[in-house]
Length: 106
Ligand SMILES: [Zn+2]
Image (cartoon, rainbow, N blue to C red; front, side, top):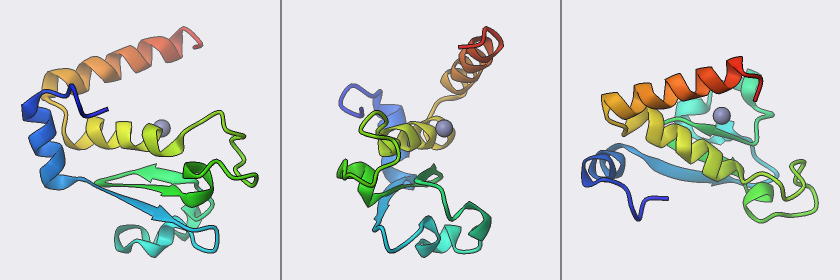
């Protein structure tokens, strides 16, 4: 995902972003920035400055509710890139495209 990234985006991403994985015994609340998000403890991942994801999804285990059809970490990391490292123009281009797709029912 980052191999062909523009240097201006990659450098910003490298400066502010990180990735965390939590085990099946844990929730995303183990990370300090999400420790008061008990209402979101059932999430398989989140794309903040630290992209986090459940281990069962990364490892494609049998308990993964996404059934090997969604890589949650890739999805959440895309949010991290969008919100924390994109240029202003790219940020708005993506938002506009997402809105258009949503309105088109896709
Ligand atoms: Zn999302």
